[in-house]
Image 1 (cartoon, rainbow, N blue to C red):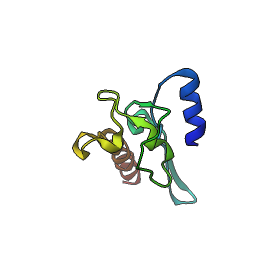
Image 2: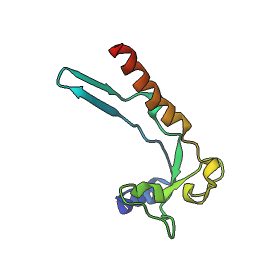
Image 3: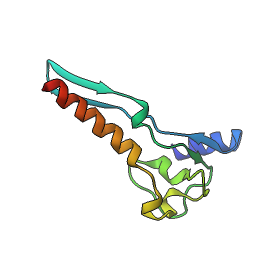
Image 4: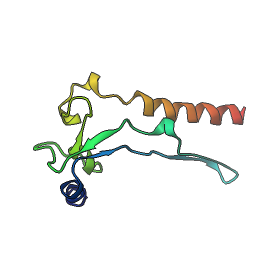
Length: 104
């Protein structure tokens, strides 16, 4: 996956991207709740063709190629308090709040 996306970046230049997240909560056969909403999307970031030199996390290969748009630093090199994940987390929280209201 890293090699594929690195090839795209080499071909087209640094790419701006974001993750579209989705959720499916199956309470039982009759109560299935799904969402893929903008509130669950990540902030935009830059993909580079040079993966981080030392950090790889199993299951998240593109994270090693992701740069912060403001600083152009790898997310892995940013202090934890500078990495914005609140919007995505809030989107999932809102999903469960809506499901609980529906279940009353």
